[in-house]
Length: 421
Image 1: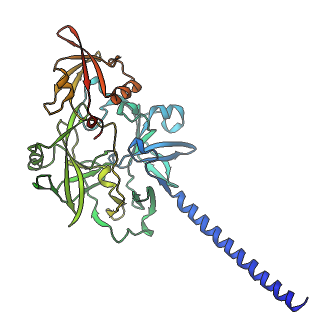
Image 2: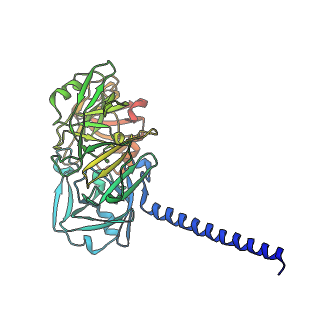
Image 3: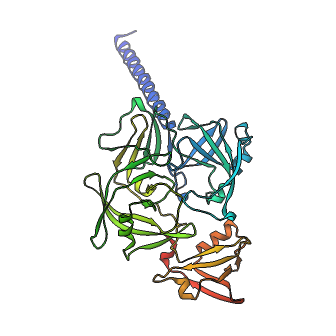
């Protein structure tokens, strides 16, 4: 072999070896990235549903639409009865107890609104983000009664000190880390996770609130993290009375329909963490009796301003501010104009009418005590989900009512602002 060809052959070997190394390194990087991605799941898989929706596995059974609800007690899970019926496995074959409950922890409910559930006092395991989690108890019920019929179930945190949960709202993913091998970013505001009146994640910090007329108040309550609440801050009936009075004396409240009654909403500027400004924060006060033992709730629209890190080993939560905040607009929220009382035979009578400007129902002639028989030709006694959606989306509502035994028709023309929070 001539020297030139020998040199060329050596160079080819070097090139070949380099290419092999490059391919090997690239494969390692790709495999590493792929492995990393398997420990993440996207948040808000279906944004129109509003909540944090993640896929989980029960052995070989996949539940693609599980709601992550941090307001649920630690180590507890709820499953939808239709999902369980379509995926029969031994885990949910035999309940320990069958009972009835309110459709929400927020309210007292009449008997016709209660729903049946099956309680299982035994562990249930899931695989989430390529990690296995054990929950101590779970229930099975018709989750459509809770207005979440598009979910296969709901669960919150397991208080596992070996893991750290990262909710990255900046890049839209949930990742679960080994607590021993992960440190929160240095620009996090770290606060202790506290014990509250219920078994869930709580935090407390002062919020300086400034209203549109420059009036100020400091809110300093113990807040439950509730990712299923699509709000900023909710002040419940156990909030400091002076704080509630501050808001309830204001005349700029917007009434938002909620659970047969309403909440009052106030848009404010806020300052937290010794100088961090939050514009257009929504504060809500309940205007009805609730069963909640918490004083306040931090909802998802507040949390989304940060990447959040829940470390149950050190019992800390980290708030990392982000710049690309986008508010969730939940189109099932509507302005409050009136409420009704639903009788045992499912007939509906107007209970009270809000005395507010631009109450389109009151202006159209609706009165307390009226029985609303139908809206847009749809009888209300046996409403389907599809019919309810059709009514909620209509801007013109033809109402058939009974008043003192007389049949009347009322036409309500709703304004644009009636359709979103």
